[in-house]
Image (cartoon, rainbow, N blue to C red; front, side, top):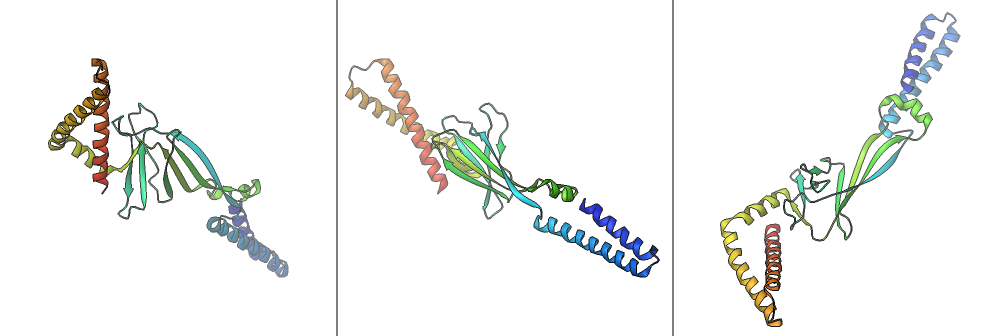
Length: 240
């Protein structure tokens, strides 16, 4: 409506100045129209620059998240730095266990991401802030300006379990490359054989009457423990 007010005042000021024969009345009416015009311009600028008649509203949403890692034994939260300064990151995740495509946080400088550890559900809590009109009157006057529901910023609090590893996309590629290298696999295979053998011998020392099924279970547990330990060491090496 403020735009129509500006146009009407501009037209009236011209009409009053040109077509009103009584000069005194013409000057008074023209002055009133010009004041209305300037007032309209003032409030339009104030609304556009200072968000006059508006206030910030924050909306919160929660989304369960799942690891984007192909390995179930090594859940990860991956991120991609934006820019060379690494002040902002985009975090990558899945919105369901069987999701074929990954999702990510907004790649905007107005987006802040905070990672926190939790014992609860892995989730992302998003708080988005918008400029909204304070009242119906403000919406009536400035609704055509296009400033309503204007995005301001957002904060993503990412809650992940302690068993999740946080790596950059580059680090994840390095991890995959090193883990698949023949030298690493050969070294790990030899070390795993020794580790598992010691674990089984220690278990049999405590319980000499262990059955074949029990020995198999100990072997599997030891192999899994060694693999997890080896991966932790590899991740620590990459993060240095």
